[in-house]
Each structure stands twice: as C-alpha cells, then as structure tokens.
Image 1 (cartoon, helix red, strand yellow):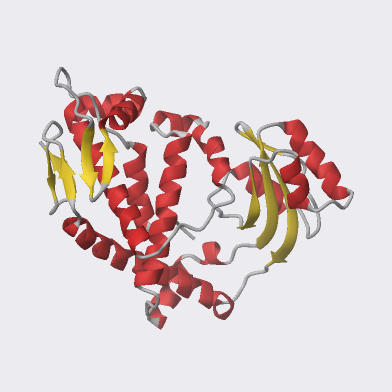
Image 2: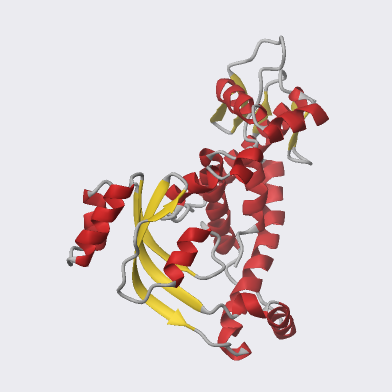
Length: 309
C-alpha cells in the first residue's frame, strides 16, 4: 500500500545526499568513515554542488548556510552506509525492482526537478527502502495486529483496499519507441516476451503487479487497466522511456467484503508496525556504529545520528 517509513527517511537522505567544499578550507580526501568504508570528500563535494544547483538546494542554503547543508547531507550519507553495512552483516540484500529503470520518468517530471530529485536519487532511495524492508522482515518476522484495528483500518480506507482490479504482467522498458513497437509485434507473433525484449536492447525486463493505486507512472497504470489477460500493450510513453507490458493475469473485483480483504489489511498494518519497530532498532545500530568524521566537516553525534559543527 505504501513504502516503508524507513524508506521515506532514507529517501530524504539520498535526495540531499552529499557534502561540500567548505569555503576556502582545504577539503580532505576522506570526509568520513563507517567501519572500513570510506566516504570520499570529492564525491560529497560533487553531490552537494549538484543539489545546491537546484531550486530546493538554493532555498535550503539560504535558510541554514552551505556548511550546515554539508553536515546534513554527510550525515544522511553515513546513515545509508550504516544501513548497507548492517544488511551485509546480516546477509540481507535488496530484492530487484523491475521498475527501477522507470525512475528516469519520474526524475524528468517538473515537480521532482524542482524538489532537487535526480534519477540517481530516486534509484538509490528506492534501493534503501527495499533493503530496510528486507531487514525489518528478518528482524521482526511476526508482528501481531489486533482484530479491532484491522476492522477500523478497513472502514477508514475501504477505497484503498477494495481496488477494482489487479494485473500481473511481464514488463520491458526501452529508451526508444521503435524498439518497443518491435517487441509488441514479435510478442504478438508468439516469441517469448522477455527473450525478444532482451534481444531488442531492453533497459530492464521483469514482472510486476499493478493496481489502480500503484506508486508508478500514471500513464502505465492507465494503460494496463484497460488490458485483459494475454494482451500486449502498445508502447507506453512516459518521460524519456517506453514501456511494453504483456498481461499474464488479471483479477477484477466488485466491492469486496471485509473478510475477503482482511488478509491484505492485516499485512498492511503488520508492515507499518514492523517498520516502526525497525526504525527504533536501526537507531540503536546507528548509535553503536563505528563512525569517524573528518574535523573539517565537524563531528559525529551518535545520539542524534547527525554531523555537528
């Protein structure tokens, strides 16, 4: 139903993920370290400059100053490294996201550009969200949910849980419309969808489940909502990318009863509670992490998980 709260926190981290040149001060080679992992000052400088060139970055710089922006984004960068290190230690990796290449579509939209988002920001924040979700499920595999809470949530969000359709589809993403059109032609002649897509140079292929409220580009949702099982979409333009989908399965719903959607509501609430538990757990991990920050940037405060001046 919605991305994890930890994802939301880390998304902000990646949106402003960077450091800065700190005026006339000589920039060190390493801005910070997390265990054996080094945070390159050059990378931090580059990312900061990129963010500060956006409208959102300029506004933030006016509010708190360039050095404080640097400390904020360096702190966010450190948090992301702690997350990745924790996941590696626990043998957890992010599941693949076949729609990842579609983030170029979102990054091309005006609202995202004004907010300072780049395609890299969206991809990295999506990956951080998937890692945090996988970690949360490993650390807190079972989360009880009370029946009265399930009922109350259903009553409050009936429209969300009673979506009218759900499709499962194979998807291919291209950088050019003609390649997408050729895939549709070849798939209609009976060629295996994913094989034909790869041979035509698809940027990404995979399978997805889509509902009317899926958090993906709206043109894609609208196009898939019109298709039946076995049908192949026309090339769908979204930003600089082109999507083609083959519908493997379609389920249409009338107004589903509470009992029918109860498992979905339960899973939704359990995931919310799991992410709350995980956030508290990760804060403890962050406080205990081996983090060192070069004095040119400030010092690491483990109690707040920030870089202080």
